[in-house]
Image 1: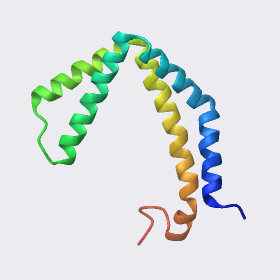
Image 2: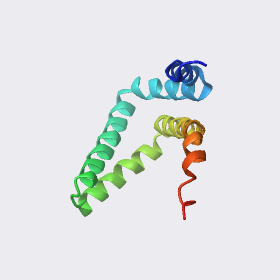
Image 3: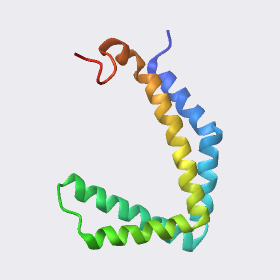
Image 4: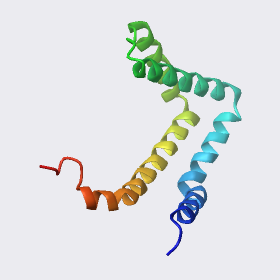
Length: 118
């Protein structure tokens, strides 16, 4: 039987070669190749990270921060190349989540699916 790690590296290679990843990579390069798109995307990512860090620390997110985040999200959604990037990322995330479910199947079979325990 093959080594699990060898199979994982083959899976990583398959992900990199997949249409989903190639579409994401192309969309990312398009965004990064345009200074305006790049700055807007980086602002969006930084806003996400800052809000996530505050949540993880249990800090309250202010109304001003919520409004600033909404403004950035609206700008990102209105930007065609960033919207395409986010759509491609979402598509690849669906695939990765499905693969993760397949990988976790042996544990689910052993322990039962969450919520099935009595």
